[in-house]
Length: 178
Image (tube, rainbow, N blue to C red):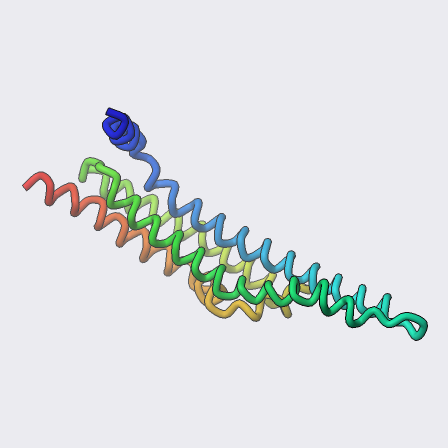
């Protein structure tokens, strides 16, 4: 009985696939900006604290290395973690496209949504490129090669994911009707 309610609720929300591309664009930009700011602040904090407490009277270098250095080193996980999050979001768009049942007559409208999403992705990708190359975050964000490639080609990724999601969404429906 509970499963039937979940299935009915899932079938009522047919607009979810339309917003997935826009949520992906905003999420990937926000994620990389957040990671860049956090890593930049923490590494600068560590180096300034290290300079402040490294005086001739008291040398706190050993304490600093045992307390703060492991935290700073743990940010290296974000290099592949951000990539996995981005790939997971792309896969979730395709899976949600598979789970949504929608009339094939809306395929053309979904193509227009994909075109709008690609147009929206262009200034987002350009803005990220400017932030990555011309601001103080340059040294931090340049280390994230896979997410940088994905965001640099964001309109291509959005268009390709949207089109594959549309084909999955509507081809499944056509197969069910046969």
